[in-house]
Image (cartoon, rainbow, N blue to C red; front, side):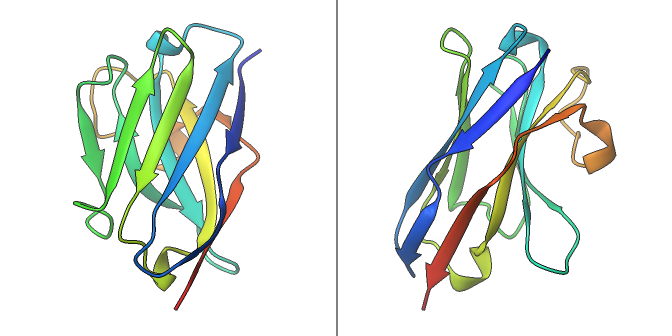
Length: 126
């Protein structure tokens, strides 16, 4: 059974950085496309970044492009989201997600993901 556990969230000032981690277990990480989504209260969960099975191909939401970097270590079953130049509007609960769709990098919808973590809160103060 695939399980995802996020960590690394917290409170940071505007312009600061955080690195989120997602620990993957229950299968081989290299069989999955992995992504990060985020959700603010009363809003729908939105796509942030996705990383293909190899870790070599990535795609980002326009709102985070150039500031966030998704990466993975298949040997250690870990996925990361490095977040730099954080803004108050980045405040949300961040979720790690795994999808068995591996033929395309355009896996950006919540319904395309089979497994989710419990989320980690990121709060950016102004």
